[in-house]
Structures are given as C-alpha cells and as structure tokens.
Image 1: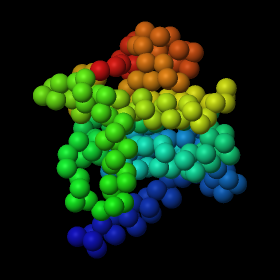
Image 2: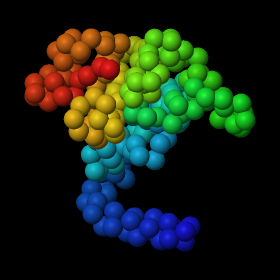
Image 3: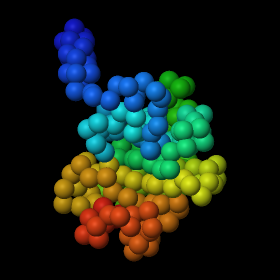
Length: 216
C-alpha cells in the first residue's frame, strides 16, 4: 500500500512539473491572492477553487478550520503577503465538528486541545437546532464558520482585507448540486439578501449569486 502511494506521489509530481510553464515567476517569490483556512479533511483542498492554485492560495489547514490554532500563519498571509481575501472555509459533515459533540476524553491531549474550542463555541447552535435534522451537523459547521469570522474580525481590521466565511457543500445541503462553495458570511454580515448585494460579489452574475449565497 505505502509503496503504491509513494509511486503515485512521484508520478503525479512528474506530470505536474511538466505542465507548469511559469517557473520563472514562481521562483521570484509568492504573491497569493487568498489566505485560505480549511479543515484538514483530505476531501477539502485548494483545488476545489481551481485546478492550478500555485502562487494563488496561501493555504492553512487544521481540524475544524479554526483560526486561533494558526494565528501566526494567518498573520503572515494577511499582514505580510497582504492577501485581499481571508477565506475561512468549512465543509458539510465535518468530522471535527461531529467529534466535538461526542465523548473525546480518550483522544490524545493534542486532539482534545483542538476539539474543546469547537465544543464550547458550538454550544449555542447545539441548543438551538434539531439534532435529528439531516443538516444538523452542517448547521453547526456554518455556526463554526461564523465564530471564526468573528475571531478574524477582532484581529484583522484592514480596509483592504475582506473576511469571507463559506462552506464547501459536499452533500447538497445548500443547493441541488454537490461540490459548490457557498458564501455564508462576509465581514460578519450573514443576511442572505444583504450578502447577495455586497460589493465584494458585484462582479458575479446575479443568477450565480442566487445559487452561491445561502444560509441554513
């Protein structure tokens, strides 16, 4: 198994480097346009935005896409690389969110350290939502994204930085198609109609905004 995986890594990279035609630009330094915080879930990568994310996304990952766990890395993306967008991206059926609502006392101290903030942050949403609803975990995911956006707003106040909260919808909980990135929050704004009219989304066609801006 491990040998086959290693073979795939090397062969995949062989294909990759042959297709890249801007090595001189890459070698001069990075100039990403997005600081992206996602869950470590292997199904969620920068490539869900575009196939070629080299020098476009400064990608930070941890379980539950929590900003506080990686403030140093986020500081670097926002303050040093000056990315205009800080995108905090949760995903439907998040394992970290689910684990935070179960007994995780037997996990390692390091895992517990990352789950406790989720547990406490999600308590208001847990008390408000129906646990039998099939979208229950996704509602908690959305609430977690809101919390992370709030934490980011308390730290990053530049007029040149938009803090965007979103959910990668793998389960068609927000629309009729899986795999869409759904915008749920911009700089703390969560009203659907107000979000659709936000200046940051002005270049997106109205029919696409109607599909991609949703709240559960």
